[in-house]
Structures are given as structure tokens and as C-alpha cells.
Length: 381
Image (cartoon, rainbow, N blue to C red):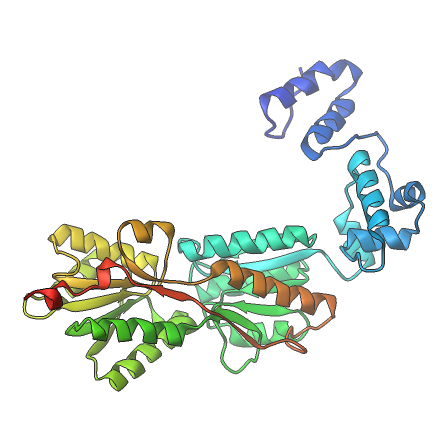
């Protein structure tokens, strides 16, 4: 019996055993044919072979494999695609990267994968990368500056062509140095003073929309609950905007930094802020904070709209079902624009990623008003 070291499905394992009389290697090629599609021969085709079959130059094949179709006709492109599909040809990316300066690999570093905002962001970037012929090296820093530094080194060791990063802060000098020789685009969070391209939401305007609404609803005070401000430039920007706008509107506002997993901290804080005499509106900086807040509301038996109001800075399909007022950031557009800027920088050999492109790309978000931010006491006779 032949044992495969790979976790193939049962019918693929059976194919290896069934074909063992013709040799183990033949069975492996049959598996590759099932996994990758197309036909397989014991001898893989080369670029020269494909060029000969397509009746074009090897340069044209190389341009096709690198996703550069501008100089070839649709007929030529279609013919090459068909030959590659039927032959099961797969380029040797390691060899290609040695011959050229490109690895066709893009690095993505995310701060916190538990935040649902990033799952949509990553999915969008992945789709754009696949379409452009790139693979992703995805890493999670878990809001740790030291982890982020290690990941930056790892991505450089893997010779990525460009880097998309949602930084936690603390590595500004390193990122600045990297950007001198490698295209870098910041996701959502800016690094002040570096002038790197960043794609983010219109956070200040969205915060103003929220506060104007809560002021109109006549809440007695408003509280911004956020995770640590020193690990996120975007949190600090929102907190600064919150305080500035509250002062301008003569609206009593407070900012509290919390750890969403520390339920005792949140229980103590909300107990001190929720009062029968005054109705407080809470702004949850993200879904993790919102979840912790909703748990306390359920535990205490508070009534949303009567005992307190809620707005979340994250919006997902379930927000509308439970009536949570929320900000909808366009994570799909943010991911698309960030990848577009990075790809342009790679294709134009633009190390900084900012020449000839906008340094800051603002993607408008929307504030959805629902029942959770309606002050029912105001409606009482």
C-alpha cells in the first residue's frame, strides 16, 4: 500500500492506490490534474514550448504571465490562456523572481482579525490580488508593536513586492525606511509625518453626524467607549474629533479607554454612567466594544432608548435587525482603493507609493439612524 503525506480527499487517495501498478509518480500527476485542472505530462511545458504553440515570442508569454496585456490582442491573449489551461502549466514563481525583481507576492499586516471590519477588507484585497495575478502573505499583529516589527521583517525576508499595513504604531521609523525601497500603503490608520498613502473613512465628518443627531435627541451626555488610543491613530483622530465637536456644540462628552474583554471594568463604568436622572448616549468605537456594552445592558436589564442610547462605529447586516444606530464604513472600497494604489506603485517602480497619486484617499461612510439612538424620554408627554 502507498501512503501519501498530503491531506488529500479519500477519492484522491484511492486514485494513487489504484494507479500504483503504473507507479507512484504517475499517480501524483493524476492528483495534480484533479487539483489544478488541465492535463499533465511527466515533462512540464516551458515558456518556450507555450510560445511555440501560440506562435508568439517568449517575451509575449512572459508579459502574459505578469498580467501585462496592453500590448497584445484579445485573440493572442485568449489563445495563450487556452494553451496554458489545457497543458496544466504552472509558472515556477521562485525561478521567475530570481530572473526578475518581482515575486508576485504582496504582504498584508492587520492589527486585529477579531474585528469583523477586517474580514471584509481582507476578502476584497484577496479578490483584487488574485485578479491581478498576485498572492498574499497575510499576518496578524494582534495590536502588538513588537509582533508587528517581527512581521515586517518576515515580509521583507519573503521578498514581497509591496506592503499593505494596518499599523498599531510604534514602528514608524522602520516603516519609513521600508517605504524608501518598497511600495507601502496604509490601511485605515495613518502615520503622521511620513506622507505615506493611506486609505481611510471620513471619520471626522461621521463623528459630527453622530453627535449632531444625539444632541438633537436631547441626551444629557454622550460617552465614547474606545480601546487604547495610543495603539491606533484612527481611534485618536475620532476621540479628538469627539471632544472638539462636543465643545463646539456645548454637549457634555467624555472619553473612556477600555479593554473589551475586561467585563468587570465595563460593568463598573456603565453602572456609574447610567442613571434614572440623566440619560446617557454611548458611542462604541467598534464591534468588540459594542458587544461588551450589550452584554452589560442585558445583564442589568436596561432598556435601550429609555435608560440609555447606543451608536456603534461599525455596521454589519445584523445591526439593522436589532435596531442599532451605526456607522457603515465602506471596507470593500477601502480595500479596493488601497490595492489599486499599491499596484500602481509596483507597476511604476514607485518605491514610496505616493508619487503621481493621492497621499490620502478618503472613502465616505454612512451613518444609519435606528431605534437605539432615539431618546424615548424626549417623546414622553
